[in-house]
Image 1 (tube, rainbow, N blue to C red):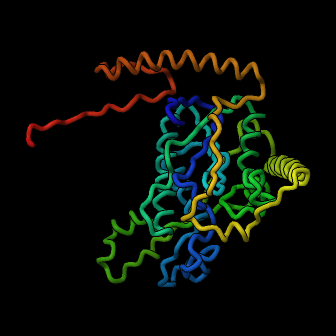
Image 2: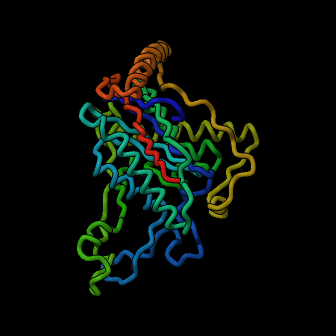
Image 3: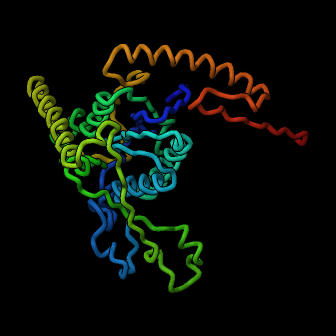
Length: 338
């Protein structure tokens, strides 16, 4: 979010984006075609518990398992999670008791994605270049708009013609057809706690676990049946796909397509990357709601800045506006030794 302070209100859907540091092609299923276990996904025998082969996850599995694990550690409502060439979109909300879980969820999720991606690419670079961007959706129509934006992002960017063709991580088929979101991981904590490699009969494969990524319906969709939600998702996505196709034909543009996407290297950057536009303050279908939020935001900033000055001056019991995070206190140690 750049220099913007983090504010979390309960029962609001937040649309978040995490952008890759180098704008690299990271979120494809098979990063390194030369690797024997990185062709779309692991071969079935690698996931067989009786096989001695230690499986290597696809990037899709890395993202899904990382999100499922972070969600188990820090429960909140995850509404969507979709990837593109160089960024991830997700939508989350919390109740009053889960406000403290939001920041740890993103910390653990993004850390696990970065570590898993670097293992696949056999590198040590930073994967994400900064803080995640996050904006509130003030009403159901704006939350639906952000959900559909995330699902159809690859279509709007001209990467694929249909969302169902996307090679990136996507929750579309779960939201539209009910397909389960299941991902595997090695429980390394349990492996090391049980003795690690010191035991000859000890294999990491013995600690392979399957996790299911659970998505929550948007606030306002709870009254809809599951088939009704799926039908709504399919219709909203289809409307966007048809609109993008019409504009593409009128402008004479083409779709990149999956084969050309797979030909890209995760170690190459685009020659002319597009500039990011300004981050919106919020998302709202009603202009008056947007103006009201802007007024409240200015008042909150005024109160936060006053609290921050007192806090950094040593008044550590200073109360901050509800839903905000205190700035970190940095202690500087000096030494007289040269």
